[in-house]
Picture 1 (cartoon, helix red, strand yellow):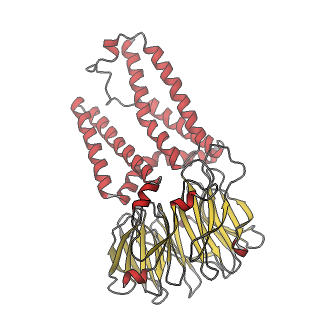
Picture 2 (cartoon, rainbow, N blue to C red; picture 1 turned 30 degrees about the vertical axis):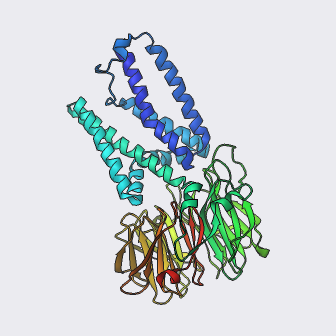
Picture 3 (spheres, rainbow, N blue to C red; picture 1 turned 135 degrees about the vertical axis):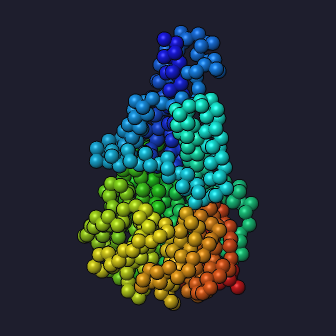
Length: 519
């Protein structure tokens, strides 16, 4: 009886070790809502109360003795409890995000199994040093477990707990990174040469309803001198879009993206990717919220954002593109429940075409327009593919497999070259526009996220999530001319075709002139 009850306590503790990091770190990552977290805490509290009451009759020297064979951190969950834990996790998260839809349950199970393998890879792309430290901690845990249990089962337990230590530390590091730098750290940082701070963290906190938000993406209308910046909440509140006057950076208008049919405290609602149609003076933004994603359509006539439509989307999208020639809006999907793209009419905002092309499955990251043909180039980091899409026929023209994971992409207007960034290899690939053949590869000093070409200085700027960016000449020998640091959580670089690039960083929005840095 005491031995059985002590095993119950150990398995409860192991349940906490396995499940608690996901609960703690998922909440600020905005992946799932707050209600599953509360359900998790309630289940663990009930289990703790039950375990304690059952163990109250165990003699103290038997239940908590350090050399007891049953009381060891190396003892993993039983197979039944492991399966039950995964099923409970998936059902609760599915209930909080989709309303318990059976169609998405299998996708959630697959995602739950894959997430432990994802975060160490993300940490490797962000920081080699951070990954090495977490790996050393995981190896240390494995060695300590093996010293206690020198059996084949102990080897398996040591490998499991060592890997789980790596996963938990990677998840914690990614969470701290994604929450962004502190405002005080941003104020101490000096603005690099060639840059000008347009919108600081203090300016953002002064915007009503946008306190504690971080810049996420940018879209610019250079002819009307207006810049749009999407703001993502670090707390459980709606995000928004701010319109800035150029070149002063003064805020013109703020549109809060508060979605209908969302529960309070449940999720963050924030505009992620944005696209702009300068001919029709319309802005499009993907407002993401688990199970309640929308395409926001707003007019910016007179440089004020006027909400025109909120289009409910079937699944979580990855990117949006507005084709100025046809006026069509392309929404790209790359999830486990839906992949391909949907096309919407610019007048009625109704869906006019849909493609379930499997080549978009993975993650359709960034896109750029070829001004000669009018086609769109997209990177799919999940399948290592470059895709060329014709917006007039709404069909895929080409799709070629690539040897490296590619994310950001930029187009050289002079020579017809493509510049694609590889986040895991930390390289920039120079490719021929017609054949997609790699002409050269250059190493960069940042975990890559996006790329932008500047015609006036004939340079390409590649930027990374770590807040660093490198500037290269857009012609042979593709020499690096600058390497700058502007704060963590850099996601998006937006060129304006007039010699300036707008950068969204965890420390604010910067205007960057590559020509000055190159000189």
